Amino acid sequence: MGLLSSAVSMTRYRVEGKLEEPILETMAKCLKKSAIPEVDDDVSDKVVGWTSFDKPFNPDFEGSSFVIGAYFVFSLRIDKKIVASSVIKKHCDMEAARRLAATGRQYLSRDERREIKEHVINVLTLRIPATPNVYDLIWNYEESSLWFFSTLKSANEELETLFFKSFQLPLIRLFPYTAADLVMGLSDTQRDALVKLSATNFTE
Amino acid sequence: MLDVAVSYNRHKFLGYEYLTWLWFAIEKDQDSMRKLDREPLSMQIGNRIVLENRQKDTVESITIKGDDAGLEEGILALRKGAFVAELNLSFETGDQEWRFTIKAESLHIVGLKCPQTGSVNSEEDLEGAVLEKVYLYDKAVRLTDNIFKQFLTLRVSGDWDKKVVPLMRQWIYS
Image (cartoon, rainbow over all chains, first blue to last red; front, side, top):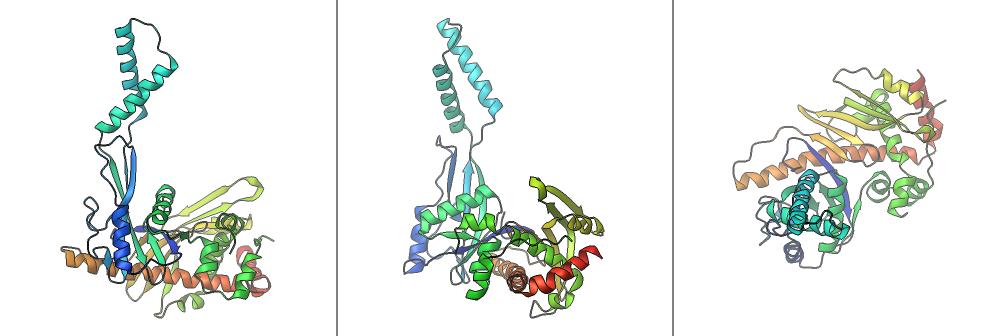
């Protein structure tokens, strides 16, 4: 979901730690290193990488193209090739029939069937284009906060993994406890009390 | 700090209590709500509340939706031990309105609609549009942070058990 959409959903994170100086050069280097590769002519069924917010299908991290005002703005792109299971089954059956006819046999072994399936998946994956999914993010570097414009579990998990791999900085997801403990400015006494809380019963 | 996975599960109730308290505060304590921003604001329950009752190892879910939906069923669910799991809110300041849903378990902000912004026709417009959107999102985020902090301050104090819980019970059973 794009940050300029008429309605957005977001997951909030705290970024632990700081980048190596000079920050802009480090950012550009890390983004380029983990930029999304093209997968259309590849047998991979999924690739994940960074892309430009303004050019999601033509990533360019030259200069400070990922800086808008005081924020780093870029996107996570997940390209997936999805082949319907019915299509795989159809092609496996066709290939199995062809082999049986060619050899005059009545059955194929389990290994042969597995080999056919792998071959069919590879051929089909190569033939179909990947479907791209783009998720924008805004990183407020000074405040160590990051907004990711998706609440999808899978997209968030990909973000957390790629972010750490790219920048060597852990992302902490802000759910009620981590938000309370890390960003609400509670005193030490209040944080101690927070750890010891137990659930309230509102019923009489 | 506790391990993240441990704290997620052990303190899951925090988000549910927060949204249940927020519904109560909007209904019964608008004065506090108005003071949450530098500019005067009004906050209302929006068009959707989801409640969950997690007693007896099962999860019962009740959804109330509609612009003028009555919330009596929700109060009834609270009496049976349910908590608010998702709350749609709208707040206005001046002639601007924000609408969004907060989820109890994750604190996700979902379906956030901000006041209308200008259209994007050029690269220069894009930067301006992003900054304008960020400003508007930030307003909603800071407001929800202020509300959450207000809840937490009460929740970790002695006033929670002595004052807030009795008042909420009174609201639930009135």
